[in-house]
Length: 204
Image 1 (tube, rainbow, N blue to C red):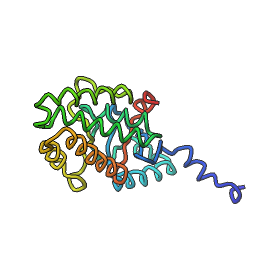
Image 2 (image 1 turned 60 degrees about the horizontal axis):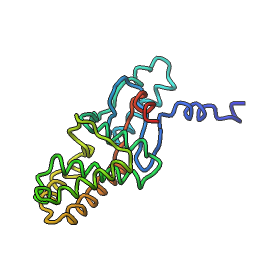
Image 3 (image 1 turned 90 degrees about the horizontal axis):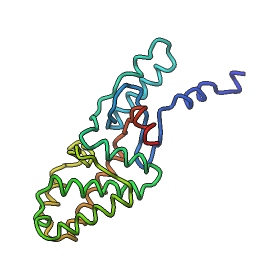
């Protein structure tokens, strides 16, 4: 029967930690943590290879509790991740969420001359409309909104430069749209987000 039925592949399907591969790759992490983890794909691949061996070899369960090299997503990042995960099957909504995170980053952390004018009211109105439409809320403890990317893949100072030098509200919106789109593409191509079991269960 072993020649007819591939029991190994069935075992791996049952033990897979992949939640969704695209537009962003989400996986479950077996370790005990309250926070999601952002990993480069090459680091995730190394961890997944160790994990696969641990599933096949008795006494290797400790590997499943190990953590790949990562950036912990807290201090506001977790709200962004939760929103992206809830909309994981809708790329358009995910990109809107990431644009909204860019709006939040701008109003919180960017010294924009445009937002020191009466145009601030229109900017805030756009945020409120998108938050209501997408059902996204960042708590009052949020310090960060856009996920932390490796500077070798995306220079974060460019985002702040483009936003701080925008000379009109239209140019500010355009810069946020373009730069958050670039960042989303980088996340899609180069990163995996690991979610603790209780995190992913709570956001189902």
